[in-house]
Amino acid sequence: MELSDHDLLTGIRNGDEGCWQALYRRHHRAVYRFALQMTGSSAMAEEATQEAFLAVLECGARFDPARAAFRTWLIGVARNKTLHLLRKEPTLAPLDESAGDDTLWTELSRARTREMVRRAVLALPVPFREAVVLCDLEELSYEEAAEALGCPVGTVRSRLNRGRKALLDRLAPIGKDKGCLI
Image 1 (cartoon, rainbow, N blue to C red):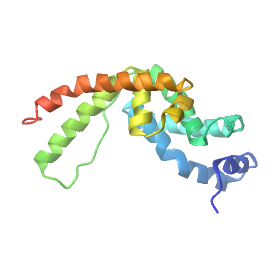
Image 2: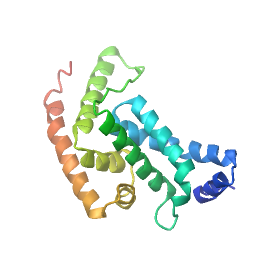
Image 3: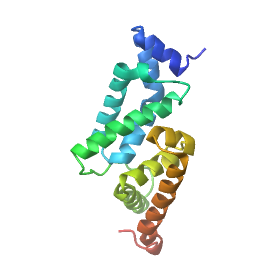
């Protein structure tokens, strides 16, 4: 039987390293993906992920399962760590991607499109970027995103709507340049 996140946190408080490892394995990818989408830097995403999980060790007792799912709470912690890193070092680095098995031309076109989308997301104001990353890329519900961001559901919906519109405006040139992406 798989232990719940709350049970794992209890085990961590009791010094059970296996519980720590299980909790980390269960949630580190989601935290890393969120931080990566927010920063555009794998180094900053790794640092934010590490800091978020260190906060679990230090502040895990603050988690209240009656208020939110652990993943939602953890994304909120990661959000705070990510925002702190962005304030310290606001310059964003492009992500590295490995090439697929497609032809060179197709891969170059896809890479350019991915980079344009990545830059468009990174150019969004942080509140809009958070909503887009959490709801569209991490597929959290409006309620889960609101809990992670510490704001009302209506605010998430508004930010998501405005973020999506800004993305569409920024990405409109991609649709016009279908013939030549280089």
